[in-house]
Length: 129
Image (cartoon, one colour):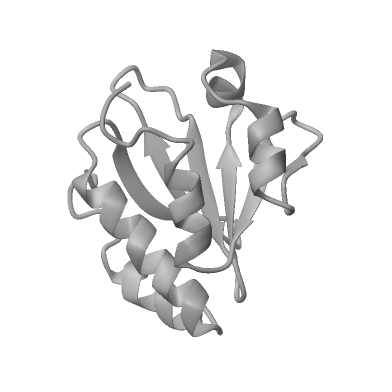
């Protein structure tokens, strides 16, 4: 679910920032899934110049986030998700050509449209830990 009414003006601002309609649709879809998820408490925020959306579990861990870029959403499997062993690097690499591991050992994938997010939904359980 979304955390209180924090930064609500940013949702429209960031959707309008996205240049491509398929990516804008993916943004709206992922925010909608986050809003309906009982597993995560989510919020949108600026982190310096970065448009950052965070997913927090009840434990306080932040397993996922994404940043909004003009032509894609860069989705992160943060260290708590990577270390959990619940996600398969091999399967993610197979399903997403954009899969990368950054220097912090976090995994990233580019979401360019709703179909990309639908593929992500097969890897992440948004309803239960």
